View (cartoon, rainbow, N blue to C red):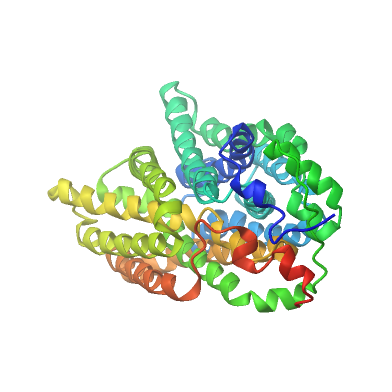
Length: 459
C-alpha cells in the first residue's frame, strides 16, 4: 500500500459536519465544568467562610482555597499528558469522572481545609481534561475549522460555565434558600455537566493520528478516517518511530512559547475570575453575581465569539498580540476609575468592556483554548507538549491565586490593575516572537510530520 505526503489529507479537507459538532459538545462540556467550578468558588466564598465560622480569612488561606484546584490541575496535566501517550480514548472520561465526583463531594465539606483538599482532587480532573480534550479535538479536526472549533469548544464553553454558576446562585437566592445550602448546591451542581458527557466520551473513536503514528495500527486508523470522512482512505499512514525526547527538544521553542503565552493569559484572567466578584465588583459598586454576569455574559462571551470568527482568518499570532494589547489599554484606562466608577459610569464601563472583550477575543480564544500546544508538536509527542502548555497556564493561574491577595494588600487595587496591564503588553510583544503562525495549515505541515518525512529517514 502506498503512502502519501499527508495520509490525513481527506480528514483535513473534510467540511464541518455533524461529527465535528458532536465532538465540540463532547469535549467542550469538560471546559464548561472547569469554568463552572473555578468561577463558582469566587461567587460563594463569603458564604463558605460564614458557614465554617471563619470571620476573617488570611491571604494564605484565600490563596489555598482559590488555588488548590489550580495546583491539582498541574498534577493532572502532567499525569494524563504521559498517560495519553498510551491512548487518547483509553483515558477519556476518567477526567470528567474525577471532576464529577469531587464536585459532588465538596458540597458536604465540613470545614475549610477539607474543602481545599477536595478542590485539589477536582483540579486533577480539570488538568487531565485540558490535555485530553484539545488533543483529541485537534486530531479529529479539519484544517479550515480547527481554530474556531477549539476556540468555541474551550474558550466560549468556559465562559458559559461561569454564567451558569452565577445564574444558579441567583435562582437559589430568589427562592430563599439558606446561605449554607446555597454554596453547597452551587458547588455540588458542578457534577451535572461533567456526568452529561461521560458516555459520549467513552464512545468517541480513537484518534486516527494516534493509532497510526504511535500505535502503528494503520488499518484501524484508515477505518476511523473512513468513518469520519465518508470516503475510502487508500494511503496507509506510517508509524512515527522517532525518539520522543529528540522530538520534544526539536519542538521545544514553540511548545515553551505556547506555555509562556498561556501563563501570561491565566495571570490576567484568574486575577479577575477568583477575586473580581469581591474586589473589582466592590470598586464598581456591583454585587458578585452582577459582576460575573457582566464579565462573561455581556462581555467575555461576545469577545470569545468574535475570536471564533476571526481566529482562522486573521491568524493566531496577530489575534493574540492585538488581544493582549487592547486588554492592557483597557486595564490602564479602567484602573484610575476603579474606586469611583460611579462618577464616570460610561467611561468606566467602556474601559472594563474593552479589557474583557479583548482578553477573550485574542488570547482567550487561542491560548485559553489550548490551541497552540496541540498545533505546535507532532502526534508522537502531542499530549506531552499539551501537558507542558497546560502547566504553564495553570502556574499563571496559581500565581494569581496565591500572589494576588498579598499584592492587593501591599500596593492596592489600582496599582495592581496597572501591573496586570504591563503583563498584557509584554504578552502582546512576545506573541510575534515565541510562536510561528499555524492558521490554515495541517498539523503534519506545521510539524514536519508527513509520511514523506517519516519515510525519508529524517530524525
